[in-house]
Image (cartoon, rainbow, N blue to C red; front, side):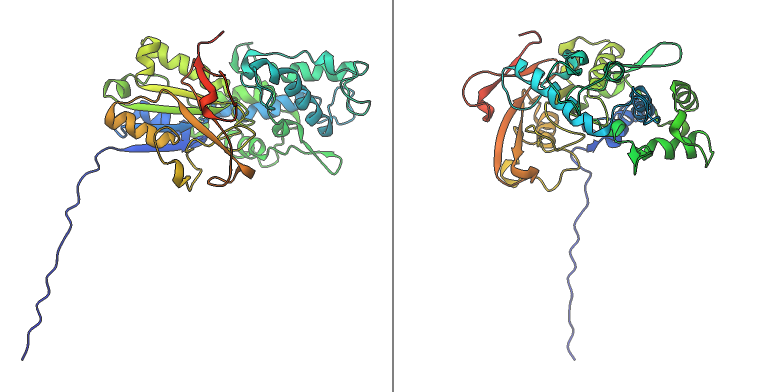
Length: 377
């Protein structure tokens, strides 16, 4: 009779060394909310294109649609969907060179305004089928104004120049008015009014104000008191595309300013725990004409050849948390056809806000051609 002896080994589970969170859009909003409500949960947060002020983000699409004449498709003030690509292209043509590099990207859309009168019929900038009538000039002008509530208080920044307008302008189907941004109808119909027949054809700031007062599910957040998260040594890297068609990037400017104010910190002290990077030419969370790939949340798999703190924001965050090396720049990469890990088209160094990424010398498609500059320089 033989006996077999089996030896079993076990691996002792240990607590994680550090804890990290990465999210974009709604995930970005939730990350900031988590830092405010539960500051002990994570040591580092990577938060992209955060959807803070969410109800206004969604309401914007209905308000802007009405500003350009929708749903009256026969109105002389209504701007047809086919006119918008030409309007945006002209914005880029006029404003792109102001940053020193003609690359089809408006680096700082929040710092510019464009008089739509230049696009009127008779100026010669747009052809006879796309140029703007006097009523349409007025529509475009109001489309790029901030959003105020019924009392006149500005609560959301202007839609940014150079961004794709489809979220509010592609609003007809087979010649009839139909809003393409369906989230607005779905949320107001189900969560705000609980009325299955409600439609956004008459959407106004009053509808936005009603939703803000009710705040169903507490989805509208603006949690800028991060004192406890800062006090325990937590770190935040946030990023936002300057070509974001969904959540206006100026929101992150406003949010950053409020965090600094509510935590009662100097700019230097704020940057010691929270760094914000703007990515010119990046759409919502990723994609776009710019060098947008920085190891973005929700953009997996990462490029294995660029897994280092200089090129990957998550690794930069870990290096900051674990080695106290704050990211002075993040290098973004543009790939052919936006296929991460494919052929590299260009790279660019980005700087913590309020610093700006400016072309210095050499090839603008190389990260070494860019430096950090103070605003106004």
